[in-house]
Structures are given as structure tokens and as C-alpha cells.
Amino acid sequence: MELTNKEKGLIFWASFAALGAAGLGFALRVLSIVHWGPEYGITGQDAGAIFGLSLWPIAVMMILFSLIVDKVGYRPSMFLACILQIASVILTVMAKDVSGLKWGCFLGGLGHGIIEACINPLCATMYRDQKSKMLNILHASWPAGIVVGGIGYILCITDPTGTTPWNASFWFMMVPILGYGLVFAMIKHYPQDERIEANISNKEMFKEFGGLGAFLAITFVAYELINQMLGLEWIKSEYLSGHLLQFSAILGAIGGIAVGVIVGSKGKWLFFILCLIMIPLAAAELGTDAWIAALMRPQMGDNASWAIVLSAGIMMTLRFFAGVPLKVMSPPALLFVSSLFSMLGLYLLSGATGSLVFLSFVIYAIGQTFYWPTVLGFVAERFPKGGAMTLNTVSAMGLLTIGIFGAPFMGAVNTSYETSAIQQFAEAQNVPSLNEYVGDGNFFGVKYNTIVPSDVYADEALNEEQVTALTNDVSVAGRKTLKVAALLPATMAISFLLIILYFKSQGGYRAVHMEEDNDASAAA
Image 1 (tube, rainbow, N blue to C red):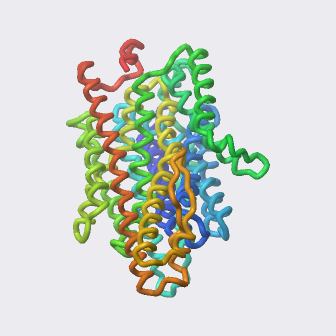
Image 2: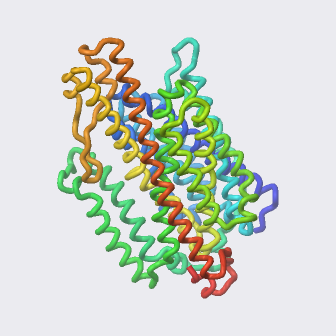
Image 3: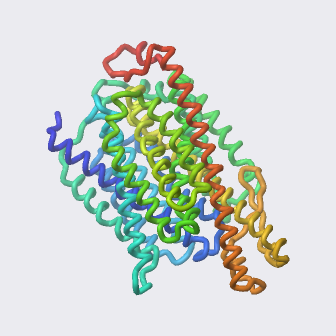
């Protein structure tokens, strides 16, 4: 049944609100992560790993629901997402320890995953001739949620009475959650997926995905699931913990070969490459966002929270006008230009002062504006036969790896710089007792020193002036993390440039339409 423009509008804007709720939750976690260390007594890497709990479940649910959403239906799927997000809000607000915080992040991630699994194919199907443009507009809701979340957080922590805790800001999520839940419950008709409408079988869909796509998906899903199980007392294994990535890769290889043989396809190389690019892309966008407010707080004070609101506002505004650059350049070209802006912005932020801080933020915001939705549009245009599976899997790769590599990597780099600064201070000021707080960290075999700065600041050997000086040293050292982060978009820029050159050798970039011959769509 053909949808009316009114029905399309309702579905689109309800989807907008749903993703906005997820963006709101992300912003609140980004801004409140600065409280987790002091309140729960955890390191930067631990906080990053907990933050990752709100991200990797998104990827798992996106992949799983890509397989069943056509049978389950969009309405019940979105209703389940609504329930999970409500539970996430309640658990986070009521959290008294790390366990409650973890469950709040985890359930929020599950709900977000179902939302993305539904709204991305819905948008691509309803607007099949404007996929990149409309996906960019849909994903303007993500920074819109960040703006609302940032303002909500600031209102709570600047409460004149000083009685409002940081986690009370999560109640702001309830407005869009209840709003999209009500609209999706009212909608009676939903569009049929473009792939289903064209009678493309599941086997044909998996040929786009193929053994290569299955290898990546199984590897990273296995890593996260096994990693979570290893946290249980009855299943702990030091050997497996130390070789988890290798073990997961073996499972991925076995699964990838099996899928490749069953469907008779290794998958599309370009799709595989885009999945790999999502690793640094997610780390550059979400991993950096997770730490940028905390890193810039000493330089900007309370304005650090407003800075991320500003960058999100720029991103939201520009995404509404994504059709403008897409008229003069292809999706890979737009992604290349975005990578250059992001690289420059992060590098400048690592050392900017005064008004240059906000200018750097603007450049950084422009850089990451078109990343995620343009990759989705790229995949939707080049691999329409893959349906929800390819569309959601490429996004899932970024979300899976941000929990595995991105956020913990940024946290580990930040902790390493802070620890080094404290050790240098201890030597210069002749306060050897500070070295007693130094511990050992390990990031995929790379060992580094760890420390919880709040513990050091409370050391009785330090006077007030020394604490102030040490706090400043730690803050300056922490900002060096952003210079390391600038290497991520540099890698992406090289990758997208090579893709541009590839399409140029093939006669230029063009979208693949379902009605075209298989030979035409097999170009990539």
C-alpha cells in the first residue's frame, strides 16, 4: 500500500524524535562522564569502557533486528525500543553504584540499536531517490538531541540551590521517548522495504554482505559478548582475556567462511572497506565527543559544556542542508573534505587558547557533521540489494568498535598523559608519595601507567597551592589526547581519497538502482 505524504511525514519525524532521544542520552553521558571517576572511584579507561556499554549493544541489536524487522514489524520493534529507553533513564537516575550505571548504559544501547535498525531502512525506502540527503536530515536529530541534552545537563549542574545531582538531567530524555512511542503506536501503515518490494531474496541480500562482512560482524560481536561474559565471576579466564581479540578473529574467520560458502559470495570489497573505515570514523566522532568536554573543561571552565552544545548545533543545522554539497560532490568526496576539517579541528583544539578554542570547535563540528549519515547514504545508494542488513551493519561496525577500541583508547591515552604529568610533578616537587598511586594499565598488549587524579589531589602531602598547580599540569597534559585523536581523520582522509580515485577510474560515482542489471551493481 502506497503511503501518503502525511504518513511519510509522521514516520519521518517520529523517527527523528526517536534518534533525538538517543542523541540526548549520548550527550548526557558524554558530559557526565567527568563525574564517574570521583563518584565511583574508577579510572579513565574504566569510565570509557562503561561509556562503551551504551554503544556496542546498539550495534548488536542493529545487526539482529536487520534480520527480523521485516517479520516482526516496525511498530512492535519501536515499542520495545521505547520500553528499553525508559528503563535506561530510570536505572541511570537511580544508580547508586557502578552496577546501576552499567545497566542504564546497556539498556539505553539496546533501545538505540532497535531504533537505528528501523529508522534507517524506513528513511531509505521512503525517499529512495534522495537517500543521502534525507538520511543526513534524519540524522540531524542526533546533534539536536545533543543540544537539548547539553542544555538539560547545564541547567541541572548550575542549579542555584546546588541540590540537583548530575544524573537528574536524564529525566529530559522522557519527553522525546514518550513522544515517538505515542506516534509510532498511532501509525497504521508502514512502507515495505525496497529490497522486499523488488523480490530480492535473503540469499541475494547476504551476497552483498558476503563472507567478508560476516567476518567483521562476527569478530566484533563475539569480542563484545565474550568480553562481557568474562566479567562474570564463574567464567573468568586470564588466558582468554589476554587473547580475546585473536580468539574472536578466529571465530569471525570461521563464520565468515561459512557464510561465504553458503551464499556463494565473498561480499563486495567496497562494502568491506567502508566497514573498516568506520573504525577510525567512530573513534574520531563518538570517541572524541565522549572525552572532549572533560578535556576542555580546565581551559574553558563551565563553558566546556556549552562548547559541545555549540558544535552539535552547527552539525544539526548543516545536516538539514546536506543536499547543497551533495549537488556538487559525491558522498565519498564529501567524506574526504569532512575528514580534512575534522583533522584540523582536533589538532587546533589540542593547543588552542582564548577565542581560538571556539574557532577550533567550529572547524571540528563542520568536520564531523556529515560523517555518519553520508556513509549510510553511500551504502544505501551503492548496495540497495543489501537492504537493512548492509545499511545497518556498516553503522554497527563503528558502534561496536567504539566500545572495543575508540572510547577505551581515548581514555587510556588521557590517563597515560595525566599519569606522566603527575609523575613529573612528584619528581620536581619532591613528593615521592604520589608515585604510590600509580598502577598498571594494558590496552591490547600495550602497557601504560594509570592513576586516578582525584585520589592524588587528596594526598595529605600536598598543600593547597600544590594541588592547584598539579591540577593545571594534569589538565594541560590531558589535552594532548586530542592531538593523538587527529590521526584518526587523517587515516580516513587517505582512505576516502583512494575511493574517489577508484570511482574516477570507473567513470565516476553513481547510485545503483534496484531495477538495474546485476552486472551494473557488481561494479564495486
